[in-house]
Length: 161
Image (cartoon, rainbow, N blue to C red):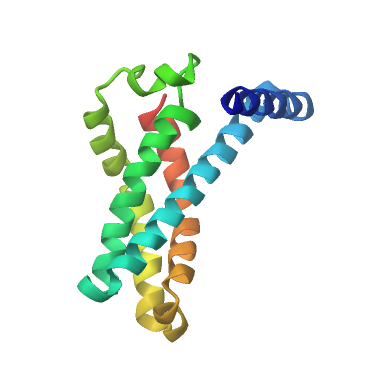
């Protein structure tokens, strides 16, 4: 039953947004909010990966592993939720025009500008700031924000049309 309640809440939020903003802008705002929620989940995974690996492999290498792990999860969640086709969400994982493995690889490739902004910010902050070196979550959050707009635009226009 929790899935049904979530779907009802999601539908109510979409209807409220459509009433206030008009249907096209509302759809974009809802989609961007979903993308942001997925991004927060990805940031948590990125952070956990960086903290788990920073001592064995170093902070910069841990940042790359964290990004790849988070980006892979973000692709999956965006595929089945944020940019799902207008069908049953349970079928969304298989209801896209290209095979999942190809879409995942293209997602990572299409989001290279966001990756450069994200990890560039991360590397700059952990290299230049003792505070960010001691607390990498600060650099991860800044990097996530830096890459978010580029990733949303590219995902929406290239990957999940």
